[in-house]
Amino acid sequence: MNLSIRTKLNLWYTSLLFVSLIAFGAVFSYSLLKIFIYRMDTQISSVANMMVHTIIRPSGEIFLPRDFDIILGRFFGVRTAGNFIQVLDPHGEIVARSSNLEDFRLPLTKGTYHAAIGGATTYEVVRNVGRYPARVVTKPIMLGDKGLVMIVQVGSSLEGMDEIFHSMAYILVSGIFASVLVAAAVGSFLAKKALKPVATITEAARRIKVENLNERIPAAGPQDEIGRLTATMNEMIERLEKSFKQIRQFTADASHELKTPLTILKGEMEIALRTKGDTAYMREVLASSLEEIDRMSYIVRSLLDLAKMDVEKGATAREKVSLDRVLAERHDQLKRRALDSGIQLDIIENEPLVITGDLVRISQLVFNLIDNAIKYTPGGGKVELSLKAEGGNAVLSVRDTGVGIACEDLPYIFDRFYRVDKVRTRDVHGAGLGLSICKEIVLAHGGAIEVESEPGKGSRFIVSFPLAGDRGLGRQAFA
Ligand SMILES: Nc1ncnc2c1ncn2[C@@H]1O[C@H](COP(=O)(O)OP(=O)(O)OP(=O)(O)O)[C@@H](O)[C@H]1O
Ligand SMILES: [Mg+2]
Image (cartoon, rainbow, N blue to C red; front, side, top):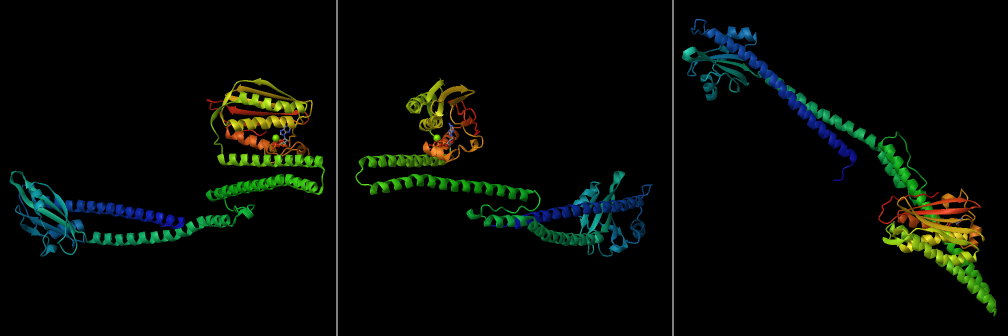
């Protein structure tokens, strides 16, 4: 059954209230009954004792008073009507009784009679004396060697108590029902009031769609559970808005980056078509077109790599990778290009270190960092590579004496399609994807990447990975 929280709350606490009131009523009535009976037993027991002392004279003689009503009057005052005395012989036959018993007799059950023979006093409730039940004490009179000589029974009608208990039960039951009804009504109202903000939040949350992610749930009221829920939901919407903005920006950037080489390609081809017979020019156009195609295929490849890593979410291949070997291979691969650009590319330290991960991705990371260092270092500069172990991590450093990165650009260089100087990097064929791929690779391997840079003097990219077999904690720093 799909009950609302309000109904469930209401049902729970009204049931709880009902059960507690019933329990209270039962305990209360039972205690009251016990007190009544105790008081009554004390009273009838005093009369019975008095009777025993009246019947047995100090001399040991037996004397039966004729009028019990005087004795009754002495104990019960004017209300003698519901109080009875009955005296029986040792065989259980009535020998005398108070006049108000008329034709009735106080019953003497077998059990009570046997108890009396044994000298025991019995208290019980009997039913067939008049309209109301009565509390009766049966007390034996034992006399030395004679044993049981008389049995005294004193009874008191429970008429008053019966009435009190009936009225009390009536008051209790109607009181309990009235309280539960009032509590249910008030509770329902209070629950509705307390849950009203939830309805408002639900309504507001329903209104928020991709198109109006800039809207927020109105946070009225104190910072209670509801207030905190509203704040948390607003934070979530803010994060969603940010993600959507990033995705939109990314799509726009990607389209733009692909559109530019396509436009250039188209333009060059159109001119080439109109130009007749110039083979040298045609070759030039083809070479330039090939360059643009290379550029486009680089972007598409990079985007695919990023998309793949987004899907994998860190679930990279876990093989042993000799980082020193990767560094040496990339150094050999790029040394020629560095020399062509007039840059000295050196490995100044290369400790043999093994990490766990994906060889292809690690090679890509090292390539991207050295590639950047060469790209952004003017001729005559230096690029130094080093690899060493430091506190359970393999630390790779790529230092250059290049153009450096301004402080305000540092936080963004790992963002997709971010380039510091768009015009200049267009000349050196940068799409702004290399470092974002590096960041994803580092994160997927539980490592960290940092950058230190001074414009005009150079930059240093430091990557650290936990060494294989050493479960060092991953750090993350995008300085
Ligand atoms: N070693 C460096 N020295 C100076 N600037 C750098 C260095 N490395 C990166 N940058 C700056 O950070 C930007 C982002 O680098 P990233 O590698 O992501 O893109 P890219 O090199 O321009 O293009 P891609 O790597 O996709 O070919 C670069 O455009 C460049 O401005
Ligand atoms: Mg790059």
